[in-house]
Image 1 (tube, one colour):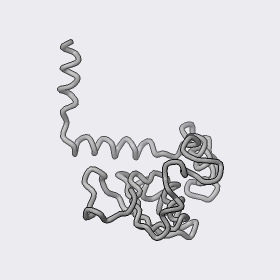
Image 2 (cartoon, helix red, strand yellow):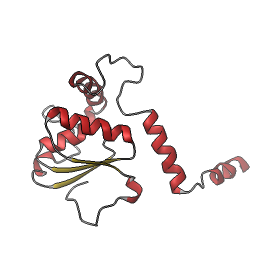
Image 3 (cartoon, helix red, strand yellow):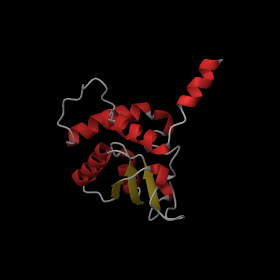
Image 4 (cartoon, one colour):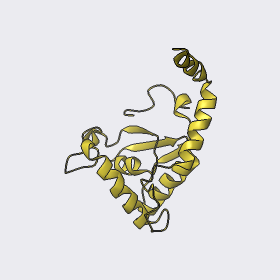
Length: 149
């Protein structure tokens, strides 16, 4: 029983230490779904995004119907012209999907790698969104800045 209490005491870290660790972990392990470096396409190329998206979509198939990505969890048909916040943008597929639905998207992530990937994806595909590195634990936006998060 003492081990359980000792473990709990070790978890009492301040938020900045935890987020520092989170940022480093995600920088070292980006959500590219290429755990074994099998994707041979040049990083951030159209072929690279297509390959990692295909892997992500397979893993996310429970959240979509056959007609649209993520439409079981994101009301895509209702977001045209709406201000949308994408927290944890990763490689940018959700951001792209939201922009293509007509939303005015702001995407944030705790890592520089995710910001670079999402920014490059949008540039490559001729899409526009605001993309910035920030910690979701302390977002720099006023209350009610977004219609959907």
